[in-house]
Image (cartoon, rainbow, N blue to C red; front, side):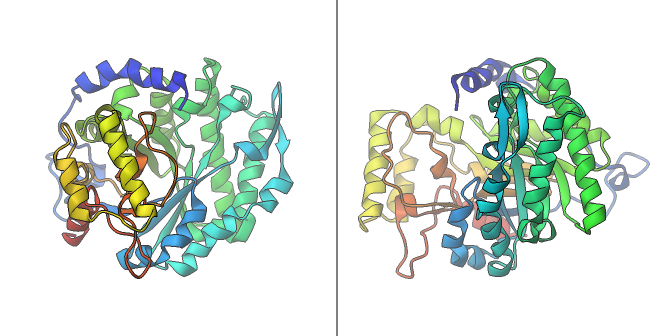
Length: 403
């Protein structure tokens, strides 16, 4: 993550952590509320579905087919970063690298999941890093906007992916990746509206039936008052009939951020459309408590033991974190209560962490500790499947078993 992004987070921390949402009541869709403002029978809060997230690592999914099938996982999510597939010059986007899209095997691998893990609905997010294109969102009706549409249409046509996905997310953390020009705020709102409308045209002409979400907005409760792109995107979600919902990333420093973010979205920002959370973690809290030689050194030694086939067991791993001051125990359980309360349709938690010889030190961002399955730290079973992580999996298993 760039220094600018880290500073953006820091700038909002005081507001976000101190922020008290305006209303503690959930804003429900009109058809779920009776004339007295009470929730109608039959519309009570239900469990949120929990799927698996793989971010950009589509190639890793086939390595955990057995684990995904065992969980009967309901959703599998990844994103494709289209930025490298766009031609550009000093003035912006000039075309699509058609040969690069055609040469990629990402769509083939993602489409294959439908056959290999039949329980799963596919969620595809489209990521465009405008700050690299070159630091500006193309204006309304520009050639640059059309080139992005052309690229995405190529992706959805490849391997009939448009028929196979269940959800398409337009954007991935644009509040950090759009560049700093003031014009980008209105340009992105115009772009998002046009993108959703273009996708609706494709769905109608091609017979595609996937849902469309906008996002994904990270650390909503921390940044919504300091990053003007966030309320701008929410306004588009609320007003555009071709957008079915909003995607949030809950990467938190405080467990309360999940509750606060969802309350703001449903309350102050009056979003009655669907909510999904395609990424969840306590990674910013972990960065506060684990970036020291004792903890990072222990984790690095633990990962090396797993690679060598001499992994520690789950109990030892869990007991170590019981001794870590400030570790957010049962954070997934707390998050899941908020997901239910605010009627989140589904979330996708990091599913797996593969073995790696990348050194863990005080510069590490501890994404892998949020995984349900962790060959990275706990190795594999005799059948070759990954061990589950007691830091997350046990609360996850308890949650889905109570559905």
